[in-house]
Amino acid sequence: MRVSAIHLLFFFPFALFSLSQKDAARYTSAPESCCDGQFDSLSGKKVCRFTEQMPEFPGGEAALMKFLQTRVRLKEEHPVQSTFYLAFVVDESGKAMSGRMSNKRPEKYTATEKSMVQLPDSMPLWKPGLCHNQPVAVLIQIPLRVSPK
Image (cartoon, rainbow, N blue to C red; front, side, top):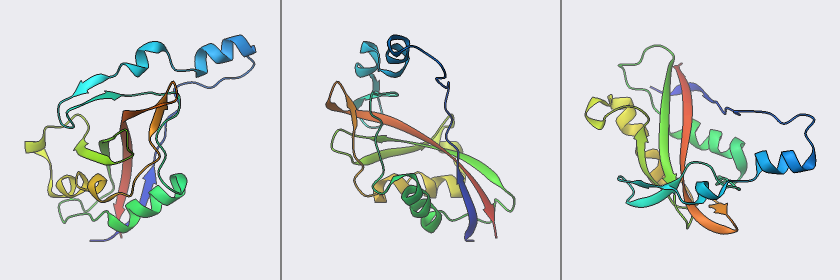
């Protein structure tokens, strides 16, 4: 079953309004600890969640949305609109890998989710995330809202 609509939801935890330059720099620059990362057992790498420069899909968000729309297929078990939380790692070279559904064990994946976790393996190289001007592995989480035709 083809998907008629995919919506990427991006959440911004806070907005900067009238802050001084000093305060803005404090809130917008990545703290030292973000570059340390945590070990990710699926990718076998030290992975950051936030960096000074987050990874970028080639062509930007619009190209990522088009990529996902052409590849996401709903299985018959999802006859209604559903939201899936796809997570994967973009490593230091920009390769997307280690797809998974956030907050769900692999043995509980539906057929649709099993196909979605394979999407990162077919993605083109991303522009890698940077921390202190050094490429780092970053965990990306994308909520996907899909609805059948």
